[in-house]
Amino acid sequence: MAWFFSEEEISSDVYALSEENQKHARVLRLRDGEAVTVITPNGEQCDCAYKSGGTLRVLSRKPCENEPDVFVTLYQALPKGDKMDTIVQKCVELGISRIVPMLSARCVSRPDEKSLRKKRERWQKIALQAAMQSRRGIIPEVADCVSFAQAAELTKENDQTIFFYELGGDSVKDILTGKPQTLGMFIGSEGGFEASEVQQVLLNGGRAATLGKRILRAETAPLAALSIIMYQTDNF
Image (cartoon, rainbow, N blue to C red):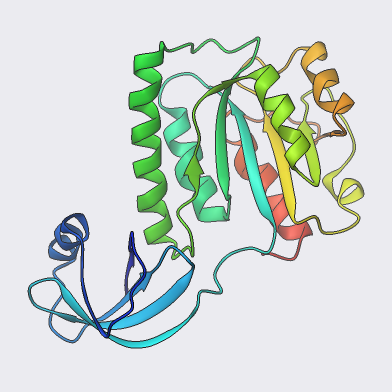
């Protein structure tokens, strides 16, 4: 079944796909009568039948139930190369709600402001495509890149924050004794984190966590961490 997101609420029983979604429908070679689902900005799931020309006939409506019941934000230190593309794609598939790229002390990759804008646009497009493929109820936001200090300040918005530290910490199982509504997770770049950065997050109420004795690659760690969090909060 094709899965689309609309930029507006759908009030009538006939809906015209946006130009971009029509292009995607042509790529999928949709035929008359094929089942199509459209998710609206308020999380309504509209199950539809496709009609040639890019219009849909709405058959039923219901709240989309595909989202995890914990809102997880990934604070990801920028890795080298195109690893962030993979991180965004896979984290969206696994249930992330928001991704905040950040520049930590040991980041080798330090794009200028113009390059960051272009990268963010690409990452948001990757998030959209991954959300469509994995049938998400939202398109996770890829936020503007921030400094580590700004990211540490943002953690005050979360019910709980887990700082995955290569030098060790508690297990996620021991940290997540309840189920927070909002949770932040910090993942470093190839060089890891400075001890002073760990302290900034701990002072804001965060907890240091470990992913075991093995050192994971920068693009592997967020996927492992998010999978553990989803499992521990009964979202897997």
